[in-house]
Image (cartoon, rainbow, N blue to C red; front, side):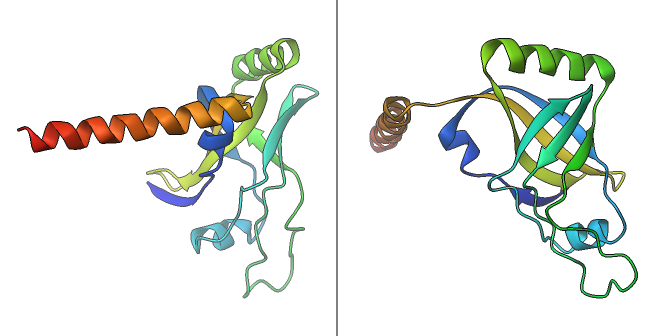
Length: 149
């Protein structure tokens, strides 16, 4: 598995409830650009519209050697999921106020471009502080355990 890009800020800003693996419908030279390790999902999000899932703000820069067809780097990309997964996501997003965010984009063993999509709830500022405190306490406990072994 070759990881192209990771959304590191997502786990800080959101509480991850479920993850899904989805294919990405790419055009022309976008695949070659991704294989070079280019692409950004920093501000990306997904929406369910008319029974389809679309990924917005996923920036794939144009491939340098591309000449004939250069797709728009900011165009929405269609995500490929099973129909029952789409219905489940649509229901959860609509009723509970959750959001869909991409965690990482990668190529699987077969060479297909995939995105790890998360069903997430936004964290409040006090939740973020609590997470940081817990992480610090766990780190200090580990250090103390190492000293006394």
